[in-house]
Image 1 (cartoon, rainbow, N blue to C red):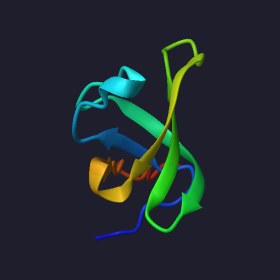
Image 2: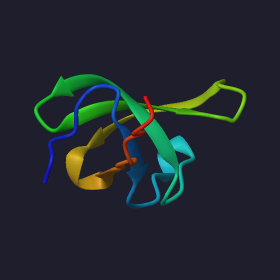
Image 3: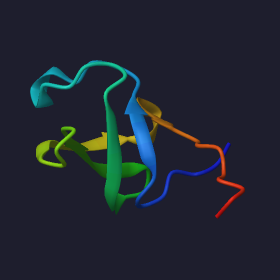
Length: 71
C-alpha cells in the first residue's frame, strides 16, 4: 500500500464528530504532524475550507485517480 503524503486526496473511514465529519468525506492532506498523523483540509465545492482535522493514517483511505494519458 502506498504511504499517504502531503497533497494526497483522502477519504475519512469513520465519523469524526468532534470535527463534524462523516465517513466518506473527502479532503486533502496539507501537513504531516508526526509519524502517521496528518492535517487534512476539507473544502466545499467553492473551495472554501469548512474543516481541518489531525487524523491518523488508519482513519484515512488514500484515493487514486486514473492518469490522464493525453497530458
